[in-house]
Amino acid sequence: MGRRYKGKFCNRIQPDMLGTGEVYYEVRVDTDKINFFTKILEAHERLAFVVQVDPARGTLGMLSTKSQEHELMQVLQSLPLKIEIL
Image (cartoon, rainbow, N blue to C red; front, side, top):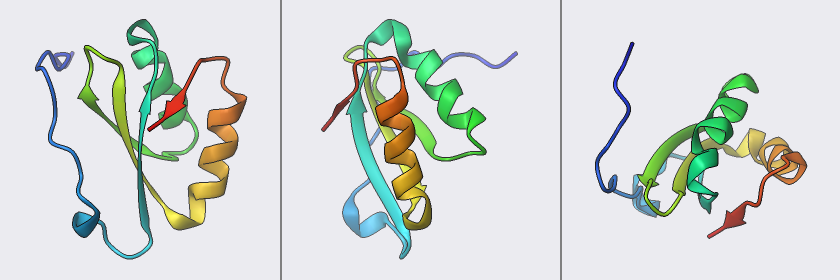
């Protein structure tokens, strides 16, 4: 089994790093819900690639495609979690 990332932060994706057709969002969730949030998005046919930007604060980055952006927002709104889009 892989090890869980225990670092303090991950480098953020800068706008000039995105390719055409890609979107990046940062969100904040409760720290005890990070794993649940990640698994839900992965279960939606890889709707977004999720990275832990600052796990101690519950800050996550999501990389997706523009064609899936609307569906991603629908999934985020339907989750039974408090999600803050940064």
